[in-house]
Amino acid sequence: MTSLLGVQLYDGEERCAVIRRDVRALLPQFAFGVAWTLLPSFFFFPLLRMGMFGVGFATVVTVAGVVYLLRLRLSWQGTAIVATTLRCIDVSRTGFARAVSTAVPWSDVTVVSAPRHSVVAALLGVGTIRVDMAEKHAFSFVLTGVRNPERVQQLLHEVQCLRKGKRV
Image (spheres, rainbow, N blue to C red):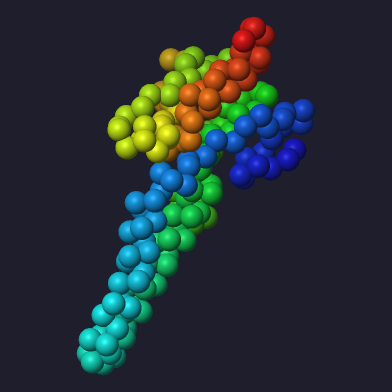
């Protein structure tokens, strides 16, 4: 058994694709984190005049910004849809150390779609990938901010058809 994003792959199971959010989709959150981290530097001298309270406040705000940026990076790095030869796996990192993975065999996948939601997403070339399951599963895999969602949808559909023994 090999491990990928904290998911154990079975013997004979191969990874076909790992789909993550595009970095461009995270730019607003990244800009907020950088602004939050750099905020105390704009008010450095007024904060120094406040004494230890000002220095403590600046330290807390800066550390909070760094923690936010670190969590954003870990969330991006640890959240993906993994397509293997046997199953489709959704890996979601919700905190610093906790990753939740849900695997579904390809026979239970009914629809792979790539709806576009906004004009900004269309301009950036990103969209949403949605993997719907059979009725016995009460959930869907959704990953937003994926680059070239139509191509990713086609790739997932090909893997699904190959697994089910259909021609593409």
